[in-house]
Length: 117
Image (cartoon, rainbow, N blue to C red; front, side, top):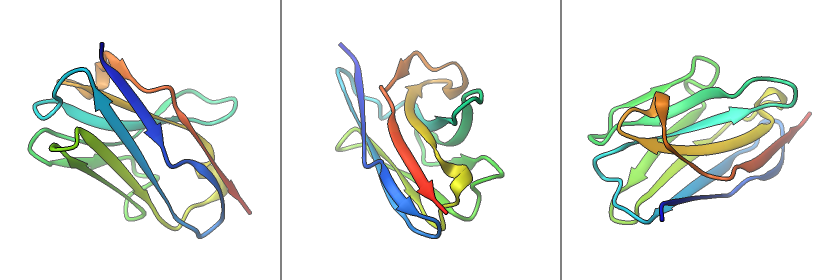
């Protein structure tokens, strides 16, 4: 059974940093894209960042220059380093994985990130 488990969320002041982790189990994801999405209160889920099987990364414009996605295939884990956090980054962050990240079949349960002003 495939599982994605996020961790690292929490409460941080504006300008602070957090590092999210997503550990995958149940299969090897080294040939899959992995990524992060988020859902803010009252808003639709939106794309944040993704990394391909060969380490090409893409970011939403709203997080470029502040967030960095990385992966460790040996640990079947993807990370999201979030710096210079803003109150508008407050959301539940979800990890996803599949060959095409846009239509991911595998999702984590989410981790809350709250940025206070």
